[in-house]
Image (cartoon, rainbow, N blue to C red; front, side):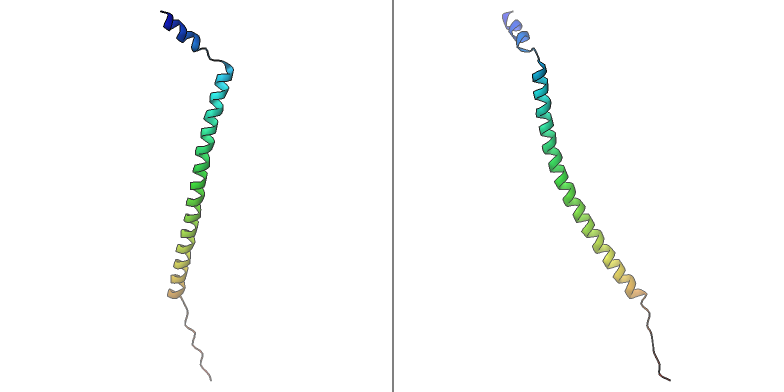
Length: 75
């Protein structure tokens, strides 16, 4: 019975304990968010480069298909 009593006395939670746990959780969230931001930036840059490359190649192809041949004759 004494063990049960010791456990209840040891489980008193103080506001300082709660604040410490919240700070610990916030620190973990900050680390995860920082890693996520780095990955998002890399993915965004890669997508932008790929999009520019595709647009360039499509424009080049369109320019070749619709290029006008101009013939000049001397009179």
